[in-house]
Length: 180
Image (cartoon, rainbow, N blue to C red):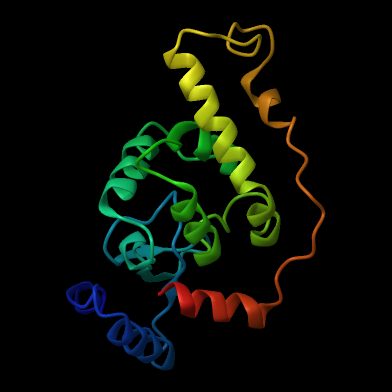
């Protein structure tokens, strides 16, 4: 089924039919995940050891080959711990805000801390800050955090993640359908 879905990667209505077929026949469809997904659909296991078809990042609107290659390259250096780590390692011209928004809405960060509604509230600020930090580093400027006076993890505690309720399941399902 993963191979069949990959052959129709550019045909969204067909992919939806195949996903429905899988669900009706007990074949788990695992959500996209920036730490596990590759461009095409693939066979993978979830946290409970259940084998299923991992949704490919190429099946998400607004996510291109360049962005997926960058994610895979950075992931090879180690799994992303959270969206802050992801932004710091991947922010730039290849991976823009629209791509990150699509990844959030599709559930590609669901295995990390913070739920989708919180991430939607803060991702633009995080991406802007990561891009500014990257530009500053290129220009040779350094902050106190870069000089080793404070642990890198504390950099991200500066962000106030809003306490907003998670999206209702009905809304999340409609967004997931829209994203495929």
